[in-house]
Amino acid sequence: MTIIRIGLDTSKHVFQIHGVDENEKPVLQRQLRRSEVEKFFAQLPPTRIGIEACGASHHWARLLRGLGHAVLLMPPQYIKGYVKRGKNDAIDAEAICEAMSRPTMRFVPVKTAEQQAALTMLGVRDLLVKQRTMLINALRGHAAEFGVTAAKGPNKVVELLQRLATGEGVPALAREMLGMLASQLEAVNGKFKAIEARLMAWHRQDQTSQCLATIPGVGPIAGVSFALKIPDARAFRSARHFAAWIGITPRENSTAGRHRPGKISHEGDESLRRLLVLGATAVIQQAKRGRVSPWLLGLLARKPKKLAAIALANKMARVIWAMMVSGEVYRRPQGV
Image (tube, rainbow, N blue to C red):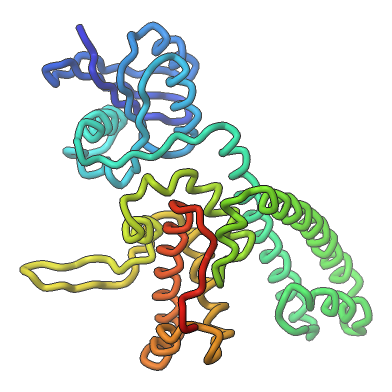
């Protein structure tokens, strides 16, 4: 029995294996407990193993590569089309095994442990932003029940707390409960500043991040995010493929020779897409004749600002790809 290809469906506790021989016939179908995976593959001759790119997939790819196997990671949406009917672990493993055999299949680069460690900074920052927003909204909502309000924005929370402390109509119990939320918010703000300082330090020592930050609308956080999440931009064939991967291009719904572009696909990395749109919105807010390109001014004259922001974000994505491939600093177009 010569196994030429194995599809491995991972999970928290039970792993499913589907292997085929040189005649494409299934010769290995079994379940493994998590603790048995490393021992089992250590006994197999080196072969090609396909894994769905999901949680902990990079860890298993590194581990199996260390055992001498060739490991390929694939996007889950590309595997779904090879599921014949129904859904269970065995069917998923068979679909993975089939998908990895296709010559046009696209694969996900395996990240190193150091790259994933750096990515945790971005994940922790996003979580802290969400927690800060939840605490501020809770403070505003509870304070409004006693007629205490303040202007919007995180910087106005101090003013809100001062009004709560001096408000005559606020019961002592409410002050105590809101004080607990305020202390929690202070702790989150301290952690948020610490992670921001760590990200800025990373930005100052990373050449790619500094290069990307020269693009109008791309700041240090966006520069670090693209540098960490896209270690090799050459994996994309063109700038258009890169923008499509981020999900900033129109969704195709064309048939019979009729081109029918729809809304943007919202595929790919949500955080990168959000950073691009926020950066494009900031550029549009500062748009003045002589400070932005004539292309953007003409677009704003014809289209709503939100639609123009999406178009500008698409253009920014293509510029980012070109700069990551070439390593050049942003050059403002002539005549601007």
